[in-house]
Image 1 (tube, rainbow, N blue to C red):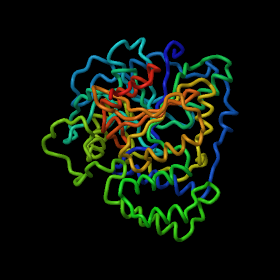
Image 2 (image 1 turned 180 degrees about the vertical axis):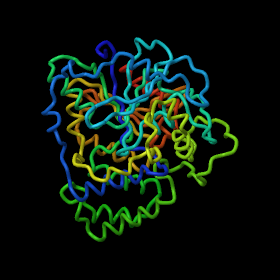
Image 3 (image 1 turned 90 degrees about the vertical axis):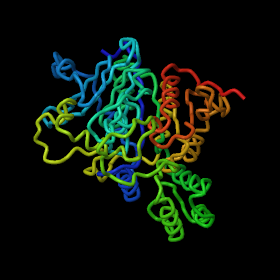
Length: 434
């Protein structure tokens, strides 16, 4: 089914500040787990992979028609089709992934397939990727209707949102190798504002705070002098280091660290009448989305909560997961593996994200020691600088998105769409004219 279509994977390592089961809480739990018990990349699962036995695949007849979404409540008219439902992964255990799929607006049969996965860890691709970033709709401030996103990524691809399956790109590569054929035609992977290498990400975050006048000279000096973020030392920081980090955390606490220049949400209340639709994500959009996706009519239209027997509300992030057995201190070996297998690898950063900032990402990528193919240059869209990009030998491209926070498509939708179009087409971002 997928052999004739180019398949791309997008990973958003973390997601922006929110409510309920909050995203920053998910990240904090992850770091605490790492501090208490370091883990390496667990490859046992991949060693156990077997070529798919098609006789054991659940019958697929009629599933596509069953999952077609006729129309979401409050949705404006669109010409493309959308689907939603559950993909069973373990019938006996009752395990399934929820998915939401939007066809490309044009040339659906020839357009590539882009799979979007949010991180968190444990946060929803539907809540964030689909409803607040790159999906075709955004939720109004009264949580009763939707409005169009003119820079939705289904202008460039068929887009599939899946609720957080782990290790997918690695799994695809190993399945293809086991079968000795291309089961899934994976062409590339693009990673946005993601934790890549703990040591460099940590020091890069505090350097970003200082260079953006968020923490004192004394704090950064003490962090550089007394903190050791290497994996072997992460659980035994000196008192001077802990005090400096606490002071830094207190300084950045009152702002939205996922976009240091963005306004914060001052009220969780919905509005009586919807605000004027905005291209830029509303600081309170988490509340709009949460309410909308917990509406029974919306869940029915999405083919979610099909039994209607859940005794809890849907949450944008899981607060059930508290420990991780596969939580490596670095994914640099995976990036090397992707490139060694000929995959197109892009990494990008919104340059106003303070939580997983551009400094840490650059420090991390520099650890790869790759030769430079094209030096850092400003790239452009509609006559303005969209960000800066550098191209490395081996198939790696790094790009910043100017003026974007952690949820890049939510803050700079045109620049984000330009970025993904060039990634999918396999061409470098256009240079800005002097």
